[in-house]
Amino acid sequence: MADDSEFTARLITFGLSEKEAQLYHHLLKYGPKPASLLAKSLKTYREHVHRTLTALIDKHMVNSSLHSPLVYAAVELDIALDAALKKHESELRELEIRKQEIQDLAREQRFRLSDEFSTYKIIKNIRELVATITSVMDSMESELLVFCHEPAIVVASLYGVNKAAEMFINRGGKVRGITNISYQMIELIQQRLGIGEDIRHYGGRGVFFAVFDRKTSITAINPDVRSISLDEPIKGLWTDDLTHADYLVSTFEMLWEQSVPAAQRVEELSQERPPHI
Image (cartoon, rainbow, N blue to C red; front, side, top):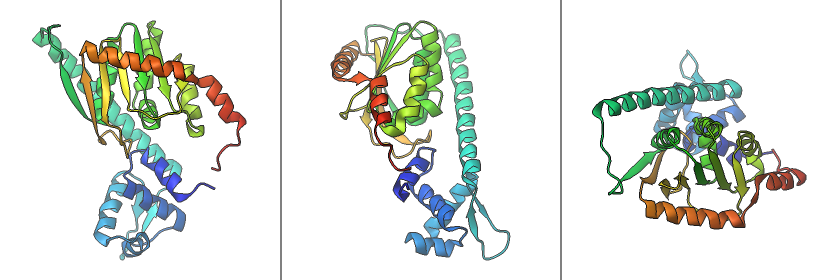
């Protein structure tokens, strides 16, 4: 059986904070409880529990009784996860609308860009990261190179980056990716292989980076991601500096030579005894 930490870690990938995931899991496991008992069981303050419960109620993952004292119960898991997915889909649609509005305004402004200067932009959260990647991919012509780990794979699957990649590939583009493929990632990797991406497994660690048409790039400044929600703070650097892009391309090609095809890695994992779930 999976331990509690693994279950809560998976909940965090659906946009919950660590405290929200622990409290929701506790209610699922032990049943309805009042806030006072939850605070005692989780060894925290009642005020913290009330704030976390309010957040979970807003996410449609917890219900409260109508009588006093209030008793809180976890919403059925499938229903709660569906609600989380719908929220992400709504946020993504909002991003698409804002993107179109900005592009329309940019055309009206008739911006003049110079190739003589390199520009830089700090990416502050996952929302900005997704918006930047999908926007750049709309105008790409040849190739996307990506080095990443599991959180980025999950983000791409949830927030439309995979769809943008599929559209790019259908236009004749090429996507190559390097990641550390674990047993839990097999399904996500197979999805990416299915849309035509060329994926390889690399057993070492490294910082996320992506290079677009070997001209522009995004590099993570802090790779520590605790939640997969759009508002999760991150720090990344986008730039059109060609020297930096060349350096990342060289790094990618070196890692590519040291990696093995994803299909080979998936087959090896499938032949091994799967982890307890």
